[in-house]
Image 1 (tube, rainbow, N blue to C red):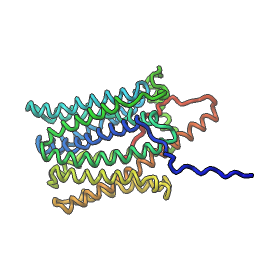
Image 2 (image 1 turned 180 degrees about the horizontal axis):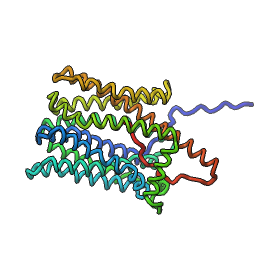
Image 3 (image 1 turned 60 degrees about the vertical axis):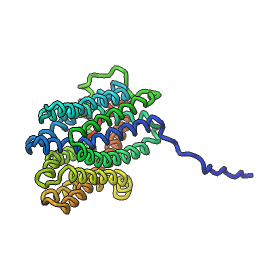
Image 4 (image 1 turned 135 degrees about the horizontal axis):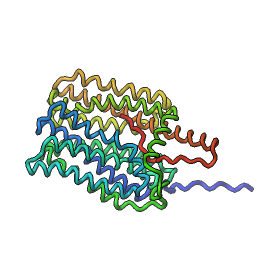
Length: 381
């Protein structure tokens, strides 16, 4: 006699991501809200209050991004050597201290472009280390089967936080001024540090964490060698580098151009950045379906092609609300394409990494790669 199979319970709950992940997500989202406020307040303060020239605005933007190029690879090795929760808390506290310099200098009457240069450079270095730790800690907070779901939750939450922070920053700058808006940025760092400090210690450390490792320079060299010898990763890095340089050159003067030539003011700047954030959120949510329908290759090509095309309206824009709306829509399209390309690139890189590991395992039994699994690969522009 065949017994009927038991039906699955309708009340069975899906696996939860856990308290540690929720604390992580809340803290990082709070920090991103503050960062979005910062991105509205900083160019407004430099251009409208300190009368920065185009060259000074470009230098300010360059100094903010310089640590990414210099410290991205060393940050991966550092994250491997220390507890990631401690790194998150420490970098959050350091970030709060750094951004507090701006309103304090304004109160003392000594705020200048030199102060903003120093803040941008130091904060950029702190941010690189924080982001490396933030990426690496997620696999320690969730089960492997839930990692894809956790990453999707992170993308959606960060997109919403970015948009909310941009509009909040616009309102705060308009209400109390750009310098005082940095107090809100400092508060967001403290909230992020508080959430990170409450994350439970993972049951087991990540590979290599807390144990002696080889010299940092050796690990960096191995990561570069892996990139060179892996065709897919090498091509992705080359394409992303070229695209990143182009977007960086444009972004260095984007806010300056809006605030001066287009007379958008901080409100117009906030609107354009806010709509762009919505585009990034939509792109992150739509990426899996787009890749499933068209495949990773065509998706990457379309994403890379859309980014420069969406920048063309900036070359034609004139002062006025109509052009402001056009620029907002173009910015949303550009960041949506960048988000889709970035998600596809990360999936392709992980796939290539797994293939390389399997191939080397077959050729050399017992071989294991010592490079950091948390090393941040270049992100989409």
